[in-house]
Image (cartoon, rainbow, N blue to C red):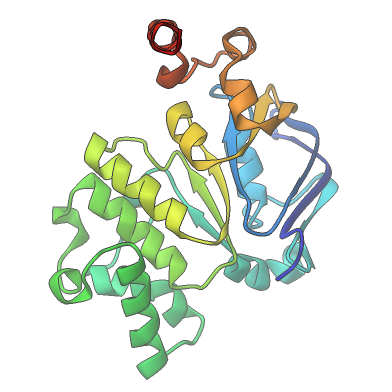
Length: 256
């Protein structure tokens, strides 16, 4: 395992219309780290994530994923190394059955027979979806939480070393959200989690990176940033509920 599965140096990116999406981003993420990526809409989170498996290639600056520089020649290796889980599982699930969906990636890479079955079963068990019960079902009839876990299983079946998740808790009810957090905690992969759900970030990630207008304005301990409502507000972010004032007052009252 490489010490730094993600290294980003001076990454700058502007869209064709001239919109500056990212400006001089420097970031190194260590193996096994779970890092939250937060920022208001339009701060550059999605653009940054799409660079991590080469959907967008760097215009200036460079990115190393595992042992590969992100460029057109290395895309296959990079996409095996980094699993991207989109915000809306419907963008990721399109096969007739759950089994086919989870098997899609490995099959595409030439994995077959016994190994394929094993990979699919293993990935489904990891996300707590029973292959026997769910394998033959159509994903359209499943709940949001189940779809999300199956989308993650499809990525895990590729055996990536890094998981990049975009708003993983969006549209989930409290129970599904709880299951998702426990699932992400249980995976020993390096994770970069872009989220508006700051309570989840606080529970899941020791380190948080804040993007604002295409620049990193904070990179450090999650605890520290979440307890700074003024800074969060300045970058159009709401404090997590667990740090909101009434709760703190109650806490002080209980402590004193």
